[in-house]
Image 1 (cartoon, one colour):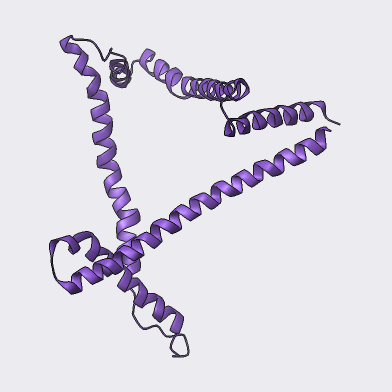
Image 2 (cartoon, one colour; image 1 turned 45 degrees about the horizontal axis):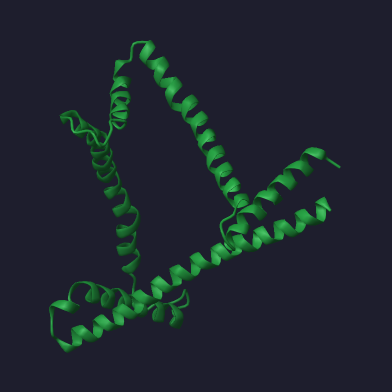
Length: 214
């Protein structure tokens, strides 16, 4: 018997049950677990940021690297009171605007290359597929045709359906809306299933912890 493992298991069990008690209604036990989680997380990240950012920045400034003062001053500008009527109070928007602009400029090419470009590349496939022996691959052919129909109809729904009274365009847009709803439903079902798996894992942990402790 390892007393430290038992103490850790009991603590985790009590905190898990305290969090689950919030399903019924807010209570002091749930608030204690919530505050403990927030406090420990804040303390942990404060220590990490101190040793990984603040302390190295201080050493760099002391050793003569004055460029480090620029992000330091930008960070201090964020603490200017927002309810101040002074003219300098608007300086607090400068660091946030800089972060948003730079982040957007960096992420747009990355996301375009990782998502849009890859989607376009994966959509360029032959409609009729054959195996190594030259026989027709029915499954791959049907998959390619469905992909073309799905992409075309979804684009038609998003771009041209509400701008044209053509019956063909409207019908194609309705088909695209069906595919979009299927995609959204699949994503929602995947998220729900992943959360359900986590919940089942916690239930299994509670049962195992109760068996070990008692």
